Length: 203
Image 1 (cartoon, rainbow, N blue to C red):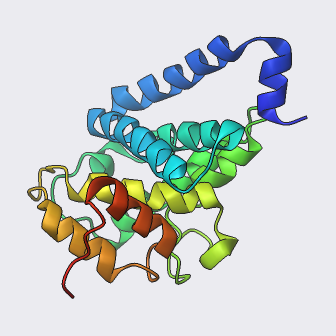
Image 2 (image 1 turned 90 degrees about the vertical axis):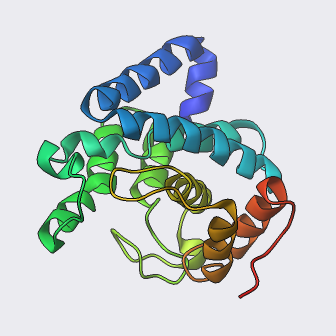
């Protein structure tokens, strides 16, 4: 039985969401930026998924996975997680463990296997040069491909201690340049249609 069928049969949908909120609150205690970022990415991912025709339980699964995509940062040391400057190579390697840590947390909960897989692969790239497993194209779970675009848009358009937010125009350019490289083309197309009026950068 899938997790969502189990939830429906047990009638504990509200309790399930409370448990999700508890995990997100735990991340908030470590890193307020990550928590707020995850909430925005969850909303954007749901809208993107709807934009490419996803409905029902799969839509809810993607929304929840996006909420939890950075939960593994709970296991990243504070001096790395909160560093305001550029990360060293070894620090970056530690930061890149957060999808694996997130997977290890979520897979321990019964019926969360699909969500754990989406979280594990949200930093894979369409061209196979992402992490942690170097998956490419449709090897990457669809939810992960959607979250990758939403995650990047929010990161690019948010102010960080080490840089100012990019303009919408620069964000469009980054998405367009990396369409079919970092990101799945149809997900980028949906993002441009939803939030940028279908515009593409002149590149």
